[in-house]
Image (cartoon, rainbow, N blue to C red):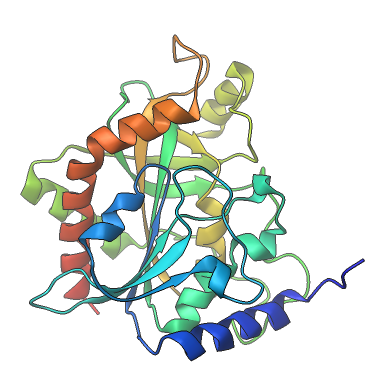
Length: 283
């Protein structure tokens, strides 16, 4: 049986391997969720690194998640340096939670100060429709293990980090301004992360509603906790791909999520680009 490598040791090992391959220093990190990976094609790429090229790095097994880092620039005039994570890994794939958030920690060590998280989610809030975009204002991550459990990595952050404002207030204002400038309706709400991989039952969706969630998915919240622990400024965007179970009149499928995200891709890409440009002016 292989010996389990401690999370801290694995992180430094992956960082050293990445630095051997690329010396690019990003300011903004972007995680692309289900169906949103094609945004990476709009970036003026300076370097690419497949996840499988990084020693010990977790590799996504989900269709639609290509599995590589793209280093480059979103705005050719301002030369805003970004690192784009084209596909993420999930806890339900069988990875330790420390592996799920390892990419976030790695991007911070590479130089990223701001993290923009995206995902496809099921809408819970009354009035949300498939195709809506929701800016995440807060989150519920109590249904998955904390990425901070176990020995604290002191070089990353304190043992008991504050989570009173996970999603940066100023970044939320910037994202709203970007949406307004493009004439894009931007919903706001609380995102709940469930364990997956099964979609939630109607009773579980109702529970999430009672707890105050407006959208539900299987990622993002744990990544935000790890990023906040490291002192990153975080913004989050959910693509409402479908009404959640019990609200939806048809069975849910991953194929449907991908198809709807593909259809909404131009709108999402415009908003992400405009938001990153405005964020670039802040840092």
